[in-house]
Amino acid sequence: MLTEIQIKRARPRERAYKLGDAGWLYLLVTPSGGKLWRQNYRYKGKTKTLALGKYPEITLAEARALAAANRVKLAHGEDPAPCRHTAKITIGALALEWYEGRAAKWTAGTRSAIKSRIDRHILPALGPRNPSDVTAADIEAAVTAIAEKSPVQAAAVLSIYASVFDAAIRRGITRDNPARALRGVIVIPAKTHHAAIIEPEAFGAFLRALDTGEISEIARWMLQFLILVFTRPSNVREAEWAEIDAARGVWTIPAAKTKTSEDYIVPLSRQALEILEEIRPLTGKRRYVFSLAHDKPIAKNTPQNAITAIGYKSTVTMHGFRATARTMLHEQLRFPPDAIEAQLGHTVPDRLGRAYNRTRHLDVRREMMQAWADYLDRLRADAKKTQ
Image 1 (cartoon, rainbow, N blue to C red):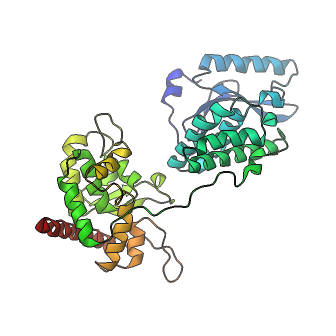
Image 2: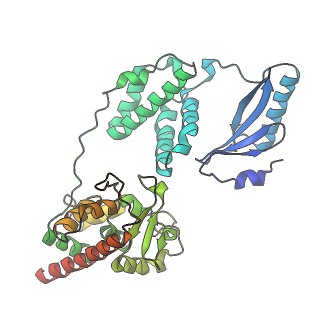
């Protein structure tokens, strides 16, 4: 028999799992953290499953009462499953069901992004509507309102609508997919390159400005560390102390935080380790390396605002540091492109078509990262001489 304490302590795992109670009642814990009441039963020789609601909206006692009522119906020869009439099915319910059914296959970042789009854009807009009553014009109005602020977000929401309606068609709930009629309605602007400095002298001047500018220390540390490791900015912003192995001089970013299916190993130069030791007294007891008073990562816009504050608003972006490193490591330090691309987290095939093994080539990447850090120090020193 389940207890409230067991339910509250249940944590999500990589795959959904069940916590059983009596009378074929159980709690399904999903990878996204959902806790859903389900009841199995047999009717006319077939095993079926009932959805009884979500915990804590439906308490343990209420779930047991619902399960008991269903057993009474079975005792009288009735199927306790509600009649699947489309009037009782909503866009919101279908969207959440679609999400729960696929969340285990996605990375943590993807799960979070898709759930946010459902909660912020689909549930408030068309969530209460019956799918059979929703037209292409309804969906177009919903997504074009989003597109006024973010065409990329609007296109992603439209894609969710299309997937949800596809699922509804497969279940016989509706015949048409109005979202599919909106292909091409949302126009995503062409991607522009992230602003980056690739001339050594100019980048040295930027480094000098970063070191001496009147900005917060937490933003300065994060930007200095980001330039040294040139990962994606979100990786540094969400870096956790548990991921840092200072003794071995490596930072291991879990696969769930990367765009691949494997951990991303970043060799740390002496200068990168020095930054971590400098910040450790401030944030070492928190989860995130670059965090403020509350144990949350530094705000997304804080480092970019710091770049603006030192006079580089239109010429430097955080993501642009990757282009800076790629260019200078190849043109100035003469490191091979394969090693550079692998350190950038890209899958690089060798001459035989095999994926470049980032773990096996750790030694050359460690040498490259230290050479890069030393080169940045020389650029700083040269910039100071010319001031």
